[in-house]
Amino acid sequence: MAEITILAKGLGFPEGPVALADGSILLVELNGGWVTRVRADGAVTHLGAAGGGPNGLAFGPDGMLYCCNNGGSRYIPGHFAGQGPSADYVTGSIQRVDPKTGARETLFTSVDGRKLSAPNDIVFDRHGGYYFTDLGKRYPTSRDHGGLYYVAPGATAVKALAFPILSANGVGLSPDEQTVYVADTESARLWAFDLEAPGVVRKAPAPSPHGGRFVGGLPTFSRFDSLAVLASGNIAVTTLVTGQITVFAPDGRVLQQVAMPCTHPTNICFGGPDMRTATITLSGVGELAQMRWPEPGLRLNFQQ
Picture 1: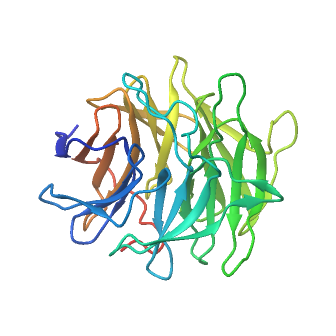
Picture 2: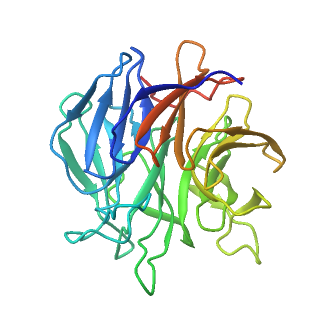
């Protein structure tokens, strides 16, 4: 496996990396609420004002970034992630972000009359609609459930596709856009939602808890975070606790487990001329890493 290079250090729980054509990376810092640009030479610049808990990022057809904002989490020294909602938490949201200035516009804060709890990850289809997950918020004695949602091009409301899901995190589309993959953090399971049309799920029958089709998991304790689909159709899932990138085949076989220099690699994205430059957020140590991947990632719709 190729050598891992550390591009930037001292980041506040980095997530949501987006690869740009000039070699720089846009990402978020959950601990601090920043949208951040990391240049190819490692220089770090904050865009706009901090706010809430920006998480997943993706370019839309209008050239703007679309951001899942979890509304803010409370960070405690010694813990790798937010421990419940921040003191100023009200709701989660979907935001449109100017990639040059960082200016944010809130688009959605609710679905079907209930608040968005903690939107987490996002992917656009070729039509300009987008799927996003909601992780839910964890409280001392309870938690909000999340789910899988869709916003059609020009829509004025969010459509619920699967609810509740225990802790929906990473989301990605298969190359033919007939399947949406969702990584569930707490159960460490990868699920597939088969599509009849954009934003229309053909749900699996009971005993599926939410209409998803089970793809795969791991035999030892771990937690799944974000994911990226490869050009081959395989799915690379960032795996917490064990500190690996787990590559699943669509039929659930574990094809590869790539060790990372951190127990909590949270996101992976692909860029470069041949789509083999993998950028990984090492959130447990606040670093951004890059390496050459054995096969190309799937180029995202509207990727710059």
